[in-house]
Structures are given as C-alpha cells and as structure tokens.
Image 1 (cartoon, rainbow, N blue to C red):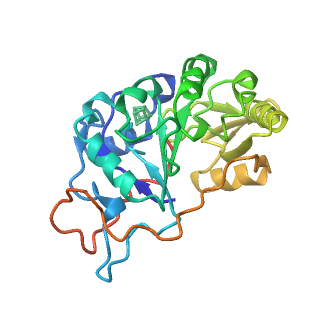
Image 2: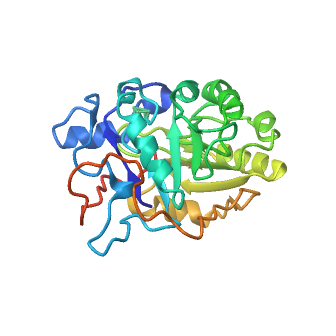
Image 3: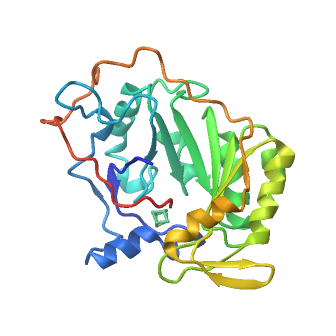
Length: 278
Ligand code: SF4
C-alpha cells in the first residue's frame, strides 16, 4: 500500500485522534507529532522518475495521501497547490485522501476541479463514532468528488449510517480497531452492524484490522500486532459493492507538464513511515 506524505505532523481534531499512531511513532523517535512541516524527501513522489524515465509510482497505482497528517490541515495551505498540481499531472494514479477536516475541502480545491472533481481522486472521511459520522458524512455527501468513502477507524462504538449510505454516493466503508499505546476496545458487533448496513445499501465494505483490543461475544481478546489484519480478513466481512473501478488513461503523461519541480528527481527513495491507516 504505497503512501505519499507530502507533509508531516498534525493537530488532534476529534476522539479518533486520541491515540494517533503518528504521534506515538514520532515520540518513539524523540519527535513531536504536533510539529507540522513540509517533508524534504518525497514531497514530489508522484512525479519522481527512475533513471530510465519511468515513474516511481507505477501507472494504475492507488496512492494513499497524507497518512501522517491531514491533507486539509490549515498549516498545509501554502503547500497544497503544488500537491494538487502533482495530482493533476498523474491522471493514471488514484489518489486516496482521508481527512477529518472535510469542512475545509471545498475552499481548498484547485482551479479546474469542475463540478464533479477529477477522476483520479477519492475522498474518504473518518467516522470513529456516531457524533463524527453525523458531522462529517453530510459534508462528504455535499462535496464535489466523484469517489467517496468512509473510514470507520478506529471504530469506538456502533455507528448507524444507513441514511448516508442510501444516497448512493458512498462507494465503500472500511472499518477497524485501534492500535498502539492506549488502544481502545473494538467490538465485533459494531463491525457486523456496519457490514449489514453496507450489504443492505449495496456499498463496498472491508473489515481490515481488529486493533489491539478486540471484543467478540462479550469476551475481550488482546490480539498480537502481526495477527490483527489476518484475523480481520478471516472474519470474511468483505463486500465488493458498486464502487466505480479506476481505469487509468491508456497513455499516461510523459512529464510533469507545467509543474515547477524541485531539482533532482532521479532515483529518489520512496518514504515509508508506516503502513497504518489513520
Ligand atoms: S494524523 Fe489523523 S489521527 Fe493523527 S492527529 Fe491528525 S487527524 Fe488525528
């Protein structure tokens, strides 16, 4: 699961941020996750090329954006236009943006976005509890994005989202528990509830991670890190739904077009801090 983290660090926004994994990992390295900065290496990852001229991020890839920050963070306003230009330059890559700040999305869209947005961008909002689902899903539904999804992770309680799923605009829901220090319980019944709601609405669903503390039928389990995704997969709660497939253009762009790229751009390292979702 390739990530693109053009900026790093964040401000906590809601209940799901309480045990933010980025803060945890930064603290282990003696860093403060509240320090927000544009990254030096990898800012231009989507348009970086190998020496043979091919892109590091292969055509047809799905790239998860800002997994150690939030794409719509106020502090990132000066850096976002350049990020949008790179997204525009790679119509052959699907950029998946997950945010807890969808209320800022509309005013942060680039010129030329159009009434429905670009084909290669998916917007996901995090909904960790009912309060945040009721706050963010109506905003998500109102926004001009062609592809929309929900991350119910870390799932902190049962969430009823039938009325939002019924809109037909949400393509997928992913759900999972919490990891790292202070992880809160995730109850299998909450996952099953979301699965049933998605099945009823014909929406894609994925139970992708049990989290560290998992409750099933009233019994609490401490799941070792290496088994959390495997155990979730074994539950078999997956639905394909009617999500629109991403079909990359037949002839991907040969260059960054009008981009003002930093010097270099050959044989860069792909930054890979973590494979965790936010
Ligand atoms: S990175 Fe995500 S989970 Fe962490 S503080 Fe920011 S919004 Fe919250």
